[in-house]
Length: 211
Image (tube, rainbow, N blue to C red; front, side):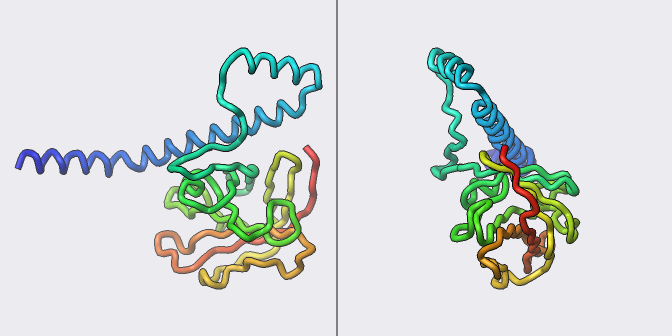
């Protein structure tokens, strides 16, 4: 009986601490990606002489490569950009692929959809989350005309929302009606906890700015 009691205590502690550990995991990877992203952009802004100087310092001190990619549970974590929606105070990484590891960190780019900034439909998905403001928890607050910003290594893309619908999973718009346009589609579960449908927010590029 004592062993059973100890096992139950351990299970109870794991259940209690799991949400905290889950948030800590997400925060760690998000901050790591944000910091490496800033370092990468800073390196690109250096003059040739400054770049050579920094490269020499890096060569003398062994450090982790800042290649904006890593691995978790055997899966590649490849950042493509940073998604920001000021209206709902959201800033999360955009990662290549919608696998388990990526959706623990940010929004995932669905396979067979357009890359960010490319003609066609760029479909990003993220958890709705039960926690206020986490991932796409507040996506339902977005209205037509609101702005969505995605920053990549090359450009800042500013999108304006033109469509907001709730559909069944099989009805998610995966292709752009006009393949010459750059369409951004954000997808998450709806309603929270039940998740029988999908909330879809679509936007078109308003402006592109070279970084």
